[in-house]
Amino acid sequence: MKVTVKLLKQLVDFSFSTSELCEKLTMLGLEVETVRTTADMFKDMVTAKITAIKPHPGSEQLKLCRLDTGTKTCSVVCGAPNVETDAIVALAHPGSALPGGEKVEKATIREIDSEGMLVSEKDLGLALESSGIMILDRSLKPGIPLGKALDLEDDIIEFEITPNRSDCLSL
Image (cartoon, rainbow, N blue to C red; front, side, top):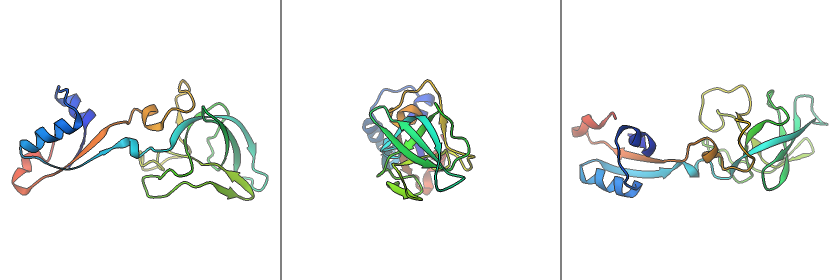
């Protein structure tokens, strides 16, 4: 069974660190199998602002988006129908890995360099379907780590539930 520390804090008032919590739960007979942080899931992904959109010279469906990442500007080729100027979007930099195992690389798409990927909720494993890229709240500044911007920074604890502890199969 997997549970996040934030969810546990909504149900029970405690101030332990994640490691202290795991130790206490293990001492109560709940074997902690693994602890992961969601920060790893969104590594090398940030918020970015679309500053300009031009049609791709080699394709009618693709667009060339100019982005402000807070520290630099970059260009990304995108085929999503919902790209718009001044939108705050989720940008996966080259080297980041999507939850499905796909690695984002710098690519040349029809002779135009693309320095990353504008991602959707589906790409990030946050939804089963999506109709385009993830458009974020316009109040967010460019360059914020994506996990922080989405308020998804948390620790995930996975328990090994033994057959004699079926009472532990729900929160």
